[in-house]
Length: 626
Image: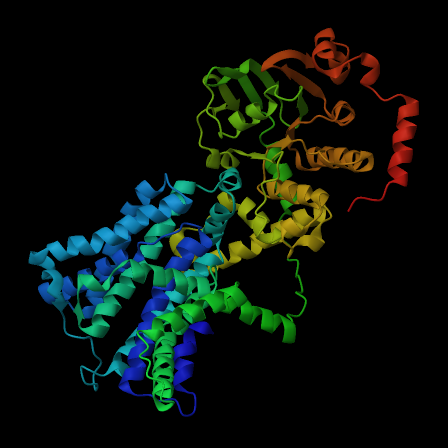
C-alpha cells in the first residue's frame, strides 16, 4: 500500500495538483528507490553504507552520458545506469567484505566523498563543475516541462523495484541477508555464504540507486557533481531510519516524509518570521528552517523509534488484529521424517566420520594434539573431558570455523578438512552451539526456514520474480518446518521470537533448526547444559528417538556424566588436547587415567541408589522449569 501513497495523495479532495506538486512527488519517489535499496543493504543485511550519494552520482552521470553523448533513448540509458552502477557496487563490496560496523561506514564515506571529486575533474566527460544537461524524458501529449508526465513514468518503476525487493525479502535471499545481520556464526553454520550474500546485497542496492540517479537527472534536466555530497548520503539513512530500518514500505513512507517535510518547515519558518514582524519584534531569524527541521527529526526518532512502518503496524494490530492463521497440512509423497530416514539409510554403507591425527594450535598453545576418532552412521558417541580439554575446538574444526594445522577430517569418504563452513550442511553435517546461536530477532519459523537454506533450489532471479516453482518450494519449506516443530513438541512457538522463549525451548528451537536441514550427522555442544534431572532424562530419550527415527548419527560434547554414560554407545576422553581414553562407557569409567584426570573417584561416577532418590526428590519439590 505504501508504494501507491503518491498516487493516493493525488486523489485527496482539494489536493493542489500543480506542476510543482508533481515535482515534489517525483523527487519523493526517486528517493524511495534509493531507500528501498539501502533498506535491503542496511536494514536487512546489516551492512552500513554512507556512500550511496556516490552511487547515485554514478547512475546519474551514466544516464546523462549515454543519453547525450551516444544519443540513446532515456530508458535505454536508465538500463545502462542500473547495470553500470550495480557493477560499481559489486566492486565496492569486495574490499568491504573484510570490514563491518563503523569501519564499513567509514570506508563507504570515503567512496561517497571521492566520487563527486573524481567527476568534477573529469572535464572531458562530465563538463566539470558546470555539469551536464540532457533533454528531459517525456510522454506524448505532454510538454517537456510537465512533471506530470514524469510522474506517470516514475511511479511504475518504483512499483517494479518495490515488487522485486519484496519478493527477495520473502524468499531464500532475503532470509540470508537477515541471517548475516543477526549473527554471522550461525549464518555460516546454516549454509549461508557470507561473502556471496554481502556482494549480492551491495550489488542490488547499488543497481537500484543507479536507477534513482538516472531518474533524478531526467527529472531536473541537468546534473552537477556538487549535488552529490555526504549530506545526501546521511539523508538516505535518515529516510530508512524514520520509515523503519527493515521495512520496504517504511522506506517509501520515509522518503515521502523527508521530501515533504522541508516544504512544511520552510512555510512554518516563514510564518514565524511574519508573526514576529507583525508583533513589532525586530528579530531576523537566520535559517530557522534548519533548526526546526533538526528538531522535528529528533522528536520523531525519540517517540517513534520503530519508524513509520512500525507505528502503523502497531495501530493495525491494536484495532484490526490479524485472525489466527489456519495451518493447512498438505500431504506430500513422504513426510520429512520419512525422507530423512530414507536418505540416511542409503548412506549406511558409506564410512562415517573419521578424524585422523588432528592438531590445532593457537600461537604457542596446542589446543588439540594428534587426536583421532571414528563414528559410524547412526551411532551416538560422546566427546568428554575437563574444561579446556579441546572438545569445542574439535567441533569448530569439524564445522570449519577453525582450520587445523595438521590432520585430516573425513566424512563418508569425503575430505572435509578445508571445506568452507557454509558447505557443511550440503554434505549432511549440522550442529548446535554451547552458547545458543539463534537468530533471536526473527521468528522461530524464520529460523527453521534459514536452516533449510542450502536445500532450497531458488536462484537469485527466481527469488526476485517469485516464480511459481519458488512459491511452491516456500510452501513446502514451511510445511517441513512445522513437521519438525510438531516432532519436538514446540509447535506453539512458530510465530514467536526465540529470545522471548525459556532457555529449554530455545535449545529445542536450535535442535529443530539443525534437524530441518536433513542432516546425517549432528554435532551437539552441551545440549543438557542448564537442565534439571527430569529435563536431562527427556533429552536423552529425544536424542535416541532422533537417531532411531531419522537415522542420524550424533556426536556430542557434555559435562553431565550421568547423561553421557546413559546415552552414548562409545566415548572419547580428552585432557589438555590429548586423547587419554576411548571405548564403551563402562570401560571409560574404569580407566585409571580418566579417573585421575577428570572423573575423580569411581564411586562418584555413577549415582548410588540413595543419590538417585535424593535427586528425584529434589526435582519433584523444585518448581517446574518452563
